[in-house]
Length: 165
Image 1 (cartoon, one colour):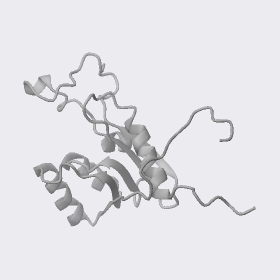
Image 2 (cartoon, rainbow, N blue to C red):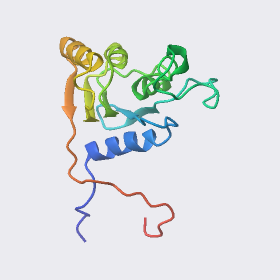
Image 3 (cartoon, helix red, strand yellow):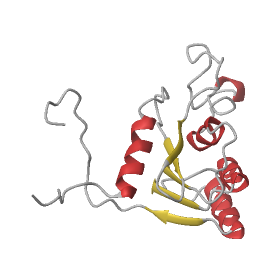
Image 4 (cartoon, one colour):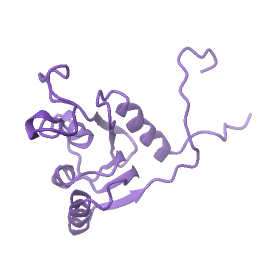
């Protein structure tokens, strides 16, 4: 019997893990996921956007507008930074990071400092923002490869409890 031919690619798999991680985010507006993978296609760590440990997401604000301390922005930890911090100091040098949204400038700094050499992303919806422009400038200067993933399939459906899995 020949092997299956409809299996997903490594890129689709790792972006799928990032997208699934994003589903853990409680942000009512933007859910972002990240998956960091080493050179032999082993997942090192994952992350999603949310508040730091010990910061109750029922107490801290999720608002996008208002007084600076009354919005989510000074408190939320982005998916990329969460993934890096979740690695507990593991060597991420030479790894690639799969992200559902192109990294901001603050996450770009952490990605570069951690030694990650490639950023694979799906959405670049803030491409014209100062933050994203700064990210791309830093990635270019640091030699970090950027790659927009164009998946071969439009969706991957997960089913729990399927007997023939």
